[in-house]
Length: 263
Image 1: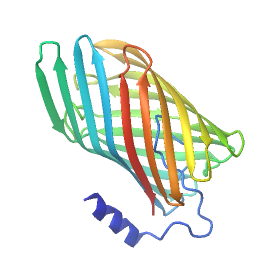
Image 2: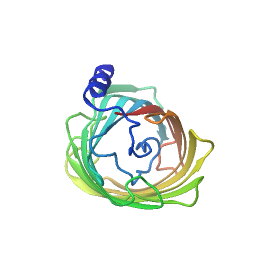
Image 3: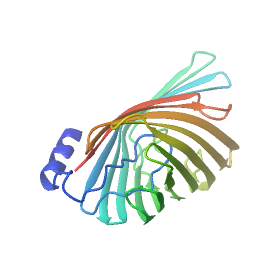
Image 4: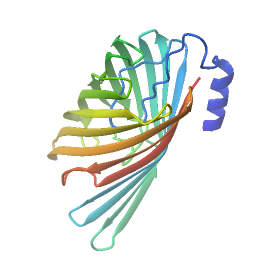
């Protein structure tokens, strides 16, 4: 299915790499969000091939596997893009200290977003963008949230020099309650440092703090992450990443791999 979508996009959209096209700037990988936007009339298809998360707490172990986490970005202007995201399949496996097991699987929710860049849409120098988004409950729990949600991000980045870039992304959400009924306030930020290891290879170190005020429990989650992105061509990127919990509320570990393609 994904191969057909990529093939159709390749047929109807002009090839990347033409004169005047900006350097490719995918959303993947990492916990942060870039401030750059896709060129007008161009599309970026970004796929999380596999994403595994382990969360252990109070004698219970939860494993979550996501496959085909899709994000499509389309440039609607020199400084603006539309985004559509959807998780095509997920599975959660829970085990407690008694040996009781519970397996559930299904599709995830959809996400609609607009990113409006205010300064340097190619991500050069100081780049700032506005990004409101909504999530639509097309999936089912535990992969889907069970209700609609909304949020706002303010992606910012600064190129220190040709090798290093700083990022900072504050965010505030009307997040869905854990019981799937209603919403609550969640807020936080991601800070990171990207370094070019060569003409096609980039690594990023990140830290994320999230304050979640779910009615069932208020949590502060601290995560650290590292990513590696390889762009063998101007319009193609492969990536791997790992996140680790820095406190008892955050998931223990997350590992993922994906690819991005511009058309």
